[in-house]
Image (tube, rainbow, N blue to C red; front, side):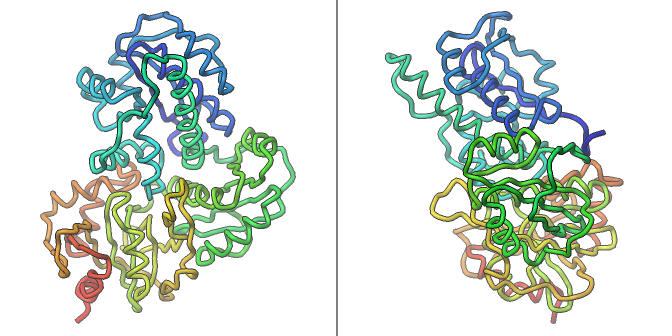
Length: 464
């Protein structure tokens, strides 16, 4: 088995007839994934139509659109959407909001994993969670429900059909590039990738909750990335040695160098900032894949007292955990802002990774090391989980946060959504329930600003 699941992540692009946007998205997304060394054994891209005529050819404008952006239009025939296709699909990308709603009306099982191409870019821009691909639909659906997003692009009028088709092609290709970059960083990789190249000159190993991840850096800007990466990952950096899993990164402004690197499975980017952005996700997901079934891995921030007691703050993606980590981390040991890994004995394995910070509306997030933000280090010795809190930022709350105890079953239903590979844990929900009960149950905290949580920390830590 080449990776943890050995099963491809299946993406189905859908529109009305399967002769327009869906096939353009299929062919361009395949092109950009293949260019990044991600084949159909890892991510399988297909398309279908709600009202398609089986065997129909794509529209001429669609063929022109695909070929203009370097994709292949050969060998295509339209397919009508079936229940069997819906049952095996992990994620649906739909042409328009009207088509998405019709897909869900006809196939209710598609609910919660269906998005328009126009929604995807802002949803991923807001994503602050590095997670295995199969967890993405649920994460993004929560973001879609909480956000006011346009479900289609602003396009030229239908009267100018050719100009409209050109604009759609540009938007689809841009979306495909962004998706391919993101999915290549977070997709499963072979455990022993074949590489026919010299060993890169810049290498480091970082510890991600007990998994040693080797980062091999190459390219014209490799030395710059190596220096910036060591600063950002300074609290995870370990001495060179044997790694449990590796990440190959090439940073070079030359498109030909990047293309060659991607064909051999390396992550490849034109600048250091972009490389650091995607490297954070790659390291996290590879570590998660290595610890499946052996740890409870919560999507949570963790802060530690001087004695090593840890409070985990759990919340959905994009709801302020990074800000919470920066604020409380100035006073308590910074354990992690993303993946809180706990073993059966409540021992917490630290992961003081760089914090991903949105700056000036950029498409990528800046990676700030905990040293750069002057966050407190964790104390030496064993870290022990003593409390779990579901946190919710609410501007309507006053300066004093609202704290409530949650019934176990209610709390588990919420908590289960924030656990990576819950289905692979021994005894599944029983293991999660045992952990929750061992720390005195779950509390929900609604707060206005992260600084308002500081007065609660002694009580959460069980201090006097």
